[in-house]
Length: 66
Image (cartoon, rainbow, N blue to C red; front, side, top):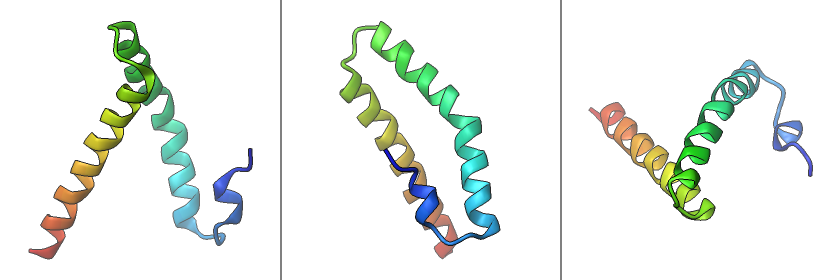
C-alpha cells in the first residue's frame, strides 16, 4: 500500500502531519485495542473514533468563524 503523503506537495505542513500521525497513531491504536477488548467490533470502534475526531473538527471550524 502506498503512503498517501508521498503524493502530496512537499511543504512543512506535510512534515508536521506526518510527525503528528507518528505521535498519535500508537495512542489511537491503544484506544481501539481497549474498545475491542471490551467487546466492541473493530469497525464500530474505529468509526466511533473517526466520529469523535469529526465532531472536534466541526467544533474548531465553528470557532474559526467567530
